[in-house]
Length: 97
Length: 532
Image (cartoon, rainbow over all chains, first blue to last red; front, side):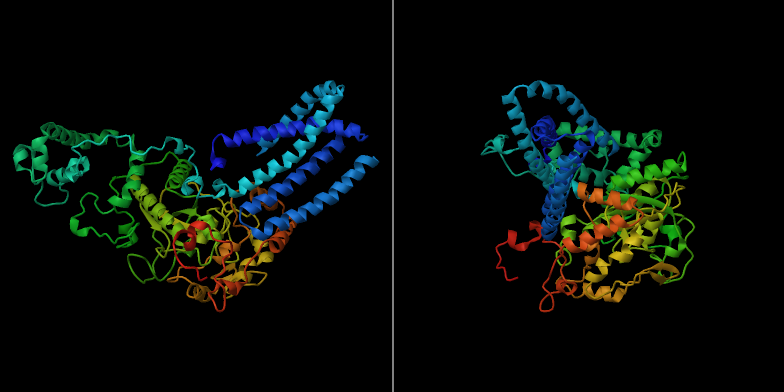
């Protein structure tokens, strides 16, 4: 299986690193064009929200691969609700402050 | 963990600082700006797809099967043989090809020569010596060596070297003491009964591994010790470190060492002696306790697809090897291994040795394996540094969890909030006869245990990031908030069959906790009619 290849893991995380670098490069332009006045704590909040979103999907798919048929979608659904609610709060903070 | 976290933060900060000026320069160009913005949007989506894939791989990865990692599942091979496959092997077949005779192999000749020249334990001594010559050898040796006289000369020379090797061994015995003891421990599986001085009449192929004691501990535990004095360790720390290291190489997933509390030794029966009351032998001063898990997929498909014997057989092998290793070092040792070859009860010993804590269901719960922990033990008098017991919150968690009690088919596990008192110690009572009723009721050929309680225990989790993270946080949160939150999710998110569903029809439906892996499903591999 490819996931056990000694090459796959480092290559995968290098690509993931590039993806994250791309997000970091483009995010300030989005903020500027959307008229958001970003400060360091707003960036941290955005980062944390994206981490929560990532955690939700990573956790859900881990449970799926572990053959937990009920747990994976319940975990995903439960955390997605938190992600959506926190996302709305974050939007409010970013635009209002 | 901390290093990885620091490196990740440094990487992100470095990227931000590096990309800041680049961004500013590119921002001036509207096309580049649009490209960067689109790229970032795409990357944000790809980031989630990638992390989902990473999560999926973490769940599938056999490296998370603690104690049964990827190679035991044949999943570590990377070389792709397909492009190199050919119609025929690369050796070349000639007209003279014939079936190989056993005498053509060194093993065949060596076995015969050894029997003729060295015959250990035989009163009549060697049956052949080199002075008698090839003609005196029995067939087919004689025929072979008449055709291959060089081989005969080489063999005689090898036997000369063998004698010299044995004479010289005392010169090297100390230098290679550990390597020799380790090798003999490994060989003990097949050389158990052919050690020096043991006559053929005493060879008992049904002796088991390790063999059941045939004598009182003061005799049996010292058998096979060939040193006049034990090999002295530099310190108790050295002894513990080496014994733990060696026990891991014998196949143990977890190892702990403790002083043996005599309360844990059964009264009324001593292996090798019989049903007697006895004083705990003086040389049972320390207990080396080791743990191995069941294969994870099989364990999660308890009750009917599971077995206890995978972990049991590994425990026996570890116990036998460790016993032999310690004898080689000159110390007494006795292995106590499942199923039933014990003179003591292992979970509390493992608790003393800091491997984990005893759970509501009476089994040991460890941070690494949860309740998927099977135990063996070797008692000895090697002076060793002992481990300290641990408290990672199991007792408090068990008080509120009760999943094992709720899923127990016959209600053998206590539902009470607080543990009662058993044999003068606080613990939850197990109604063992009710437990045995489940063994005798499941759809198996003979009673071979149940293990539902260890499968459904929330601590029984593989070693992937999600469970490791949960474990890391909740064991450090002494307020109990995290464990309550996790337990809430456990009870609502995870599907459990009803307790009686584990029984065969008509009362139950041969339910399993998880769907069994394909390698345990008959219908996946055999041409059988599926009627279930």
